[in-house]
Amino acid sequence: MGILNDFERRLEGAVEGIFAKVFRTGLHPVELATQVLKEMEAHKTVGVRSVWVPNHFVFRVSETDAERFRDTQKALRTELEHVVLEGARERGWGLVGPPEVEFETDPDLKEGRFECEASLVEGPTGWNQVVPAAPPAGNGSGAPAAGRALLTVVVDGVPGKTYALEKDRVVIGRLPECDVVLSDPGASREHAEIRRVGGAFVVSDLRATNATLVNGAPVGEHALADGDRITIGSTVLEFRRG
Image (tube, rainbow, N blue to C red; front, side):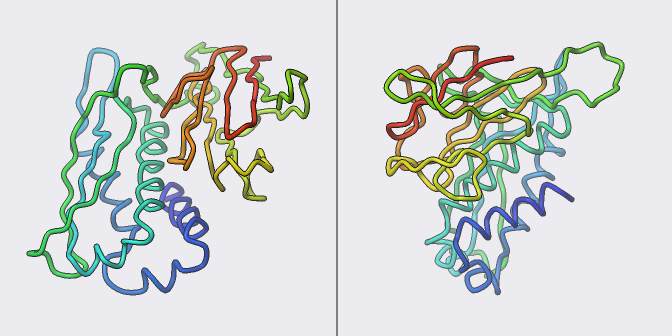
């Protein structure tokens, strides 16, 4: 499954080479990602116009596995939350709030064993974007295409380099592998992403050290409008629809 392959690849990159050492025994992260997708399928709620799935997941793991995950838990949580978004987008499911993954330690569980509790938790005020799937090409629905979108670096009020948002997922950060690379000490290695969601573009903070701002306000998930300005560190990026 592409979602799981992408999850494992991103997590391995996020923990910078210690992936094999940390996860060579006991509970493996891909087991958790697989369970997330199973829980979403098992607990979906059919509404009048949408199918809603859990966005909040609590994993209970053994003390041994909790200790092994201790130094990589932030990256693991982030990537599992990506799995929730990708699973929802791929299947056309709705989320009532941003994905959230938590870990708890259960002394009664043996190494390699875990339990998962999934639920629907409404997002806070300002979380205004449910994440449906983009309609497949040629589906006959008559839905408009997402259209062209641009992201322009603004320096001292003057537009600079412009990036075309041509991919379904554009990552912004300091890593050379990012789609939009920032040489800004206030930016995290993978700071934020912009996803194409149906006919919209949604910016998501990737649990960066410094908050991602849209028009001066911190956001977790935010549906972008033409002219919105995203601030990462001291870098301003202006979003424009073509």
